[in-house]
Each structure stands twice: as structure tokens, then as C-alpha cells.
Length: 594
Image 1 (cartoon, rainbow, N blue to C red):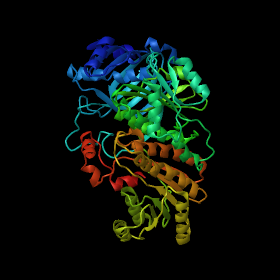
Image 2: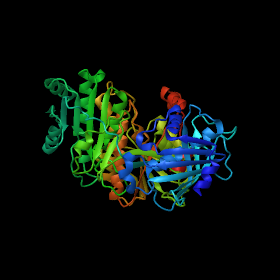
Image 3: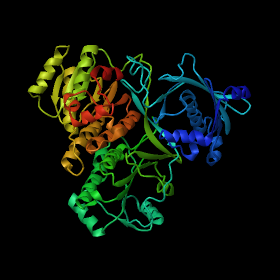
Image 4: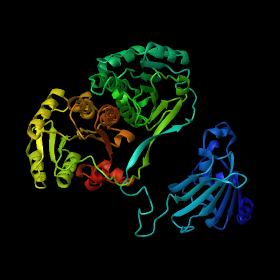
């Protein structure tokens, strides 16, 4: 009964402009498409909001059951409780945290009413408030019912001794990457019509398309064998320029065992690395420079999508590049095969964080990490007494995984490492042997197919079978792109990329239970000074996705956060992580997550 609710909530009536001025005072500036509150009625324990879809979005009304603008406006109406309780607002924004249940009865209309009340047992005005929200049409028919919506002010404190218990973003978290359909904010043509543009790569048709839309275009002919000095000479002959249009080669991939996956890095991430080095030597470090970097079908949006992971490595390098050189405006795009939406693409904004735009089926997508609250597993791919091969097993994570498997599953673990077993490795093997079967160590170069094949033969001769493979190899030596040598970049990159390919080539016909890739959250945050590692991890993630489509066994990826280790906790990076509230992964919780 909306008329009855309106009488109950008549103690305070706010106009649309008053509501959005209140949000502005908290530092939240809503754009035109998110200003759906028309009037807000506030009473004792009750808020009533009249909502209307902004006219700029009227054409999209039929596309949604739950229109994002109306739903967001319904949540915005919680500001009525803050105004009703305190009469004013603190400068701290309120943030949504939890939604317990959502029931949908019918699609939202363009004109809606939202009725907000405290959930049963919720404490009004407390640190944590739970609300129930009903969205009704103008006749009072309920379209959507929200139960247990929780919001928090940014500076809200939990009761003493309860830290973290009500806050789902505190504690050990498991996050999952998802791709959302988005409507990009359009910008004037980037590059601008007057900008001098260099086009690198692409087919003759793609280059012709760029020339049709941009007036001042030159081609920069780079070869995979070009050195940094040779690239620098070519750049110098072309004179100054404002924007680089980098188009990664588009080729079909027959299998993840194809040697081209590593060979073609020479015309992809390694050639881009050398180009960046040449630009820095030419003095572009302190100059504004635009980039458009294009790949094709390198990012998987869902489990069934086929990808070519070859140039997924560019997404790691370019992400780090964006953070190291903030004067460079960088736009990174992954297109679907055959698609060339150049007019739309030229209006996409750059991104300081180096995040990817992905184009599929006429829509743009962006990736984010969301909280995963999965039920405890009722089974496992591990087997009691299994034989498992860990490439890079002597590292921190490989060692922790090995101890867990020996203790919990009485496993026989085999480590494959590049170096011969020294005193440090022998001490680790001996210590782990006190928990059960000591790991066996095989010295082999896992970036080399023949060397890894010999290791496989030795393991099969000794143990008769292999039940699972774990790729835990990594080489991380922090350095900015201006200081990183190509050999250093290659070493860090190949520890992830080359080893992934060799695992597929050497173990593809093995009757494995699983292949497990240890990647990193660097795939998503793409830190500065870690471009080699970021490139290797983004390649590995896309490679594992495609490998899962080809192999009969399970293929899994874990993108680890920062592990608790002496060298990181007491470093400058560790101090920074602590300051921004990022904790360190402990072995016990890591094994539970796996």
C-alpha cells in the first residue's frame, strides 16, 4: 500500500537534487545515467523512494529484467536512513557489502517505487545495518524483493573483539575473475586527427582501415629479429610521432603443443619489449605518447571459448608498462576473430591501470575479481599414495605443497629443477622426508623439451606412473623496463611460458588426473617493475584455459596472492602491502583453497 507508506514516511521529503547533493558531499558523483531517485520520503525505520529510469537510458528499458540504473538507484535510497538517523552526513562514502537473497517476480518498469525497511534483528544506526528492499510498480505490485542488504560507511568500526566477522572483505579470501558487459564512456577520437600515428603489424587490410579513419599514418616495418638498436634507427628515420598502433599477428592455432606458441613471441611480446626499450633510449620516457595495442582472441571470457594464448603475454607486459609510464596513454584491446570495430575502438578511453577491453558479439567487456563463496568440496582430484611431479618444487610454494601432500596423502613427490641438487636442496628433501616419503629430485631444464622428456622417462622407470603435474616454476627479478635487460626479461617470461608449452608437449599422452598451474594475482594487477613475470602469468592463464579444452584430464590454475616469506614481509614492497591492508598467504589456508 504505497499511499500508506507515503504517510508513514512523511517526516522528511527530499528532492532528487537534494539526494545527489548529499552524495556529492561524500565524494560520490553520480553520472546522468545513475540519477534515478526522483523523491525520497523518510520516516521512522522506513524509507520510500520514487524511482524513474533516466531519459538518456529509455531506449535500454526493454533490454533488462533488472535494469542496472534502477537497481543502483534503489540501493542509493539507503542514504535516507543516514539522513534520518543523524540529520546530516559524514564525509565518508557508504559502500554496499552483502546481499543475502534476491527474488525476482517480474521485470522492472521504467517507473518504480522502492520500500526500504530494517531486516529482522538488524540494529538501526549500528555499525552494520541490514535492510530489506521491495521494488514495486506504481500499483504497488512487487517486482523485486531484496533481503539482507548490508551497507557500511567507509570508516565504520566493528564492535570490539568482532573485527572482520561482519566484513566479507577481511580475512582469507578467494576471488574469481569475471568479465562484465560494459558500456564504455566515449572519448573524442584517440588518437586525435592531428596526431602522427605509427602502425606496427597487422594485415594490409587492417592497415588500410586505420588509414581510412586516421589522416596522418605511417607504417613502421619491424622484423622479429630486429635488435633494440635497429628498432631505434627505424624510429629515428621516421621522425617524431604521437601514437603507436600495435597490431599483434592473428593466426589460427592447431594445438597447445604447437611450437609456434613460443616461437611467435619473437614478433609479439619480445618485439614490443625491444620497441619500448628503443623508445626510452630515444627520449620518449618523459613525453606524452599514445598506445593502442590489439590482440585477437587471446582472452577467454568463459570456459567454452576457444582462444589462441600466443599473444596473451602482451596483456601482462602492457599492463605493467601503463603503471611505469603514466605520461603514456595506453589502450589495450582483445578482439574476436574477424571483428574490426575501428570506429568504436577509437573512442575507447585509455586506462592508467593497463586493463584490457575485450570485444565479443558486438559488446565490450571488462574484467574484475569477485568474492567467491564456494561450498566445501566433497571430493578431490588428489589420490592417496599418488605420484606427483612438481616443476620448480624447491621454491617456497612447491615446498609447502609437497609437505602437505606427504602428510595428508602419503604422496610420492618428484621435484624437477634446473640446478643440480646442492646443500640447500638436499636439506629440504631430508626435512620433508621426516613426514613420510622423501621427495625425489631430478635435475632438468623444463624449458627444453628433450630435457623434460628425459626427466619423464626417469620418473616412469622409477615409479611406474605419474598422477599429476604441478607447474610451480618462476623467476622474479624486479626491475623497471628502463633497467631490465632482454636476457632478464626472457628468463622470467620463459619460466612461465616455455615451461607451460613443454608440459603440454611432454605429458599430453600421460594418463594424468590433473595438471595444476601456479600463477599469480599479477595476472590481474600487473605490477610495475614485474613486466616479465606479468607477461608470463597472463600467457600461462590463457594457455591453461586452452589446454583444458584439449586434454582429457582436469587442468586447473591458482593465481596466488603474496605468500608469507621473510624476503617479502620485510621488504619495501611488503611494507607497502601491509599499509594498504593486504595480508600474506599462509601455507595452511593455501592448501585449503586448493
